[in-house]
Image (cartoon, rainbow, N blue to C red; front, side):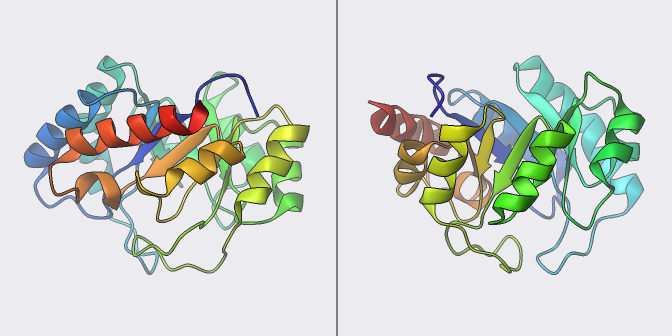
Length: 218
């Protein structure tokens, strides 16, 4: 595992009907503690994406909030929209734009992460290609997207012991269950509904995540 502390990786809800309201929720979350990045992911559980116009409108409102707080701002799936929105990079899945095309489109300085499900082979391919991080999951049940692949913490241990490319643990992660993923070697803990749906608000959720990360790292 890296000597660096694991960090929180926020993902937006799949729908944002009230953009101004969510902007305030994002500010509250970012004020709750350390957050490495925000991924704008406007896609339903069955894979239907919002319109390009809706994505760009959300990016224009939310991207500066994240970036001004020191968090990287990434778009899901679409390198073209990431470039148009002046995002810091893009997160791509296995059925999205290939890594090489995304890199050519966004340039050497962009952050490009790749979903690798529970596959060591896919992760090694992404790492060798130059991905800035690989994402494994789902580790726990989640309603954010249909779960086709499940991963176990030992995958994180294997990756972190051999490779220097950071890894993200995703899928149903909460403050209560993230400790095992941190201890196993996750560099980033991805969270969505556990933050935006937290009973005490997103700021409290981020504080709880950071406390759990610190506890697991001791």
